[in-house]
Image (cartoon, rainbow, N blue to C red; front, top):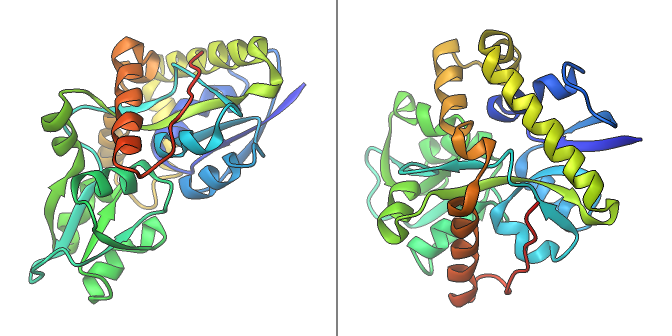
Length: 268
């Protein structure tokens, strides 16, 4: 059996999937890798196009019972997250560039700043849009969270800080999921294989980080290591009860605010 596995071409996902992709851990299935930005993966998840996929917590209310959510492989932070930035001379937040309708970053922004005006811009072009004045502010995910000051941009708000101050919970941004039509046994096998892949990467960090650097869009190795460390942590090994509670609270708050339909989530 071969599974079509989708994840974003970013250092943290590359680090997590490295050993599985290279056949360095045992798995009862073959791997066909599909790389795409997170918003593309979210939109594919709406139609259950991928057997296994990274997706945003925001998209869960729209995928219904199409996917099981794995307790392993999550990108969960505490006290930091997507960063809203503006140029040094900007005033009001005004029009904000977001990295996709279904990203968790977009949902958090709507919760933190109800009624904010947004426009979708590819995540890797948002800083350019802010610098050029095409938008008043931009919402950064991925490596932009640690490099924006080098572009002369200033932080308006860290949504991870806002989330922790509001809820006291860790922030669930990205998750890994398995198509439910494949059945719980396949989901359990994927979970075990991904856990083995993560543990291999943590035991062989130089090897796995070297692979991750290939997806870093020019980051120095110190930045690659820092970024991977931000989003591959103990919650990634097992989100635990606290991680599950954080996912459910995010979706509850969003549904209560009328931003998403009520969600049914099955964790494996």
